[in-house]
Image (tube, rainbow, N blue to C red; front, side, top):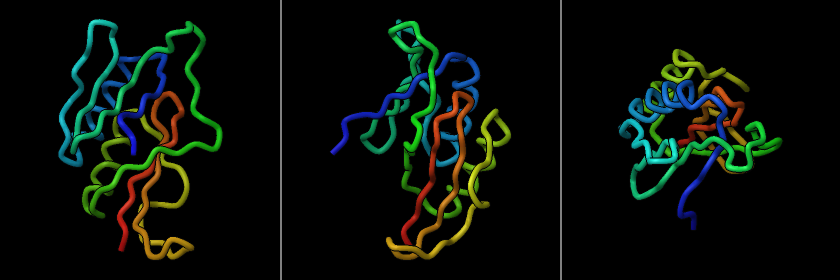
Length: 124
């Protein structure tokens, strides 16, 4: 359904530190940096791009928005730890299993340095 996801960041160096650590924690690669200074992450056929806003306004996290990444519980734990150690903020409950309307899920949540809400998810 999706071709790519793009988020804004004012501090690209902080974003690169955070996203390089979190992507490599679950088997991805560090960013490719294009000529416009955008960080491009490629994994399992998907693209995740981090860019300074092209309109010159400050970047902000989407209020009510969450970007989810599919991974195993072990990858989610490594991703969460890497994020916290590299400028991210742990949010919601600690990583773990939850029961809800979508069944049994392993979830871990972070905010990146720009405030974007991220989720690692594994369906039980």
